[in-house]
Image (cartoon, rainbow, N blue to C red; front, side, top):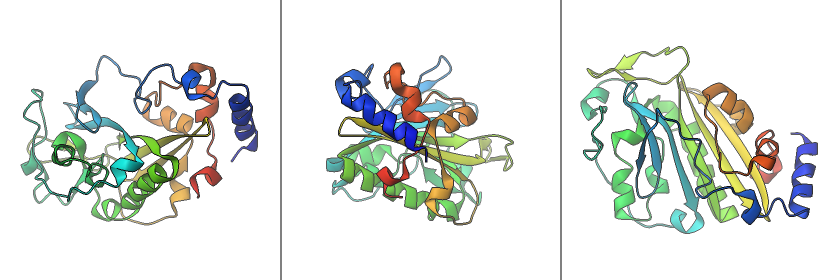
Length: 252
């Protein structure tokens, strides 16, 4: 989109500031800034901030590598509560006959590298009520792109979750699980010591558009959801990395 930002990234790289050792102020690049209100649950393959009021995650973050994409464990598991989490949770019955899919935030297909990760993907702490056509359509396409990018760039850092604005769709089930208005998903890659980010916002409705039409910068996404994404990128150039989208990098 803005060529200037891309050129600046190149300058950063050439001067040494784009090197991974200097570009990361901590580990876990996929993680957002954690606040006092976050109920953080760390699973084997992903991390969740679970909201005990809305009964859906605030966000789900994980790293996906090319090796993990090639995992061979079949999709299997049953949706259910995470009994190790003692806070209030959604129940499977809340989704029954609701008209909404149990939509994975971290998809099972990204966790087929072990039996345990596959099993954990079906915890309802990783699930949101999602429009069926979105779940099986454009959201699925975006999930597949994430795996393609993990193969292309060796690894990709991902954070996704629901967006609740006007609560258009209300709640489902006796526990009143909130139905999101939309969903977001953001990606970070490091290739040749250059950081690139892209984000997407998809309304929780049926319909189809080109993936590019859902794209926004990470900065714009942060303004909408109020979460500081990829907070472990060094502050010296986090703004530059997150302010633009370079479609060519992503093959879009």
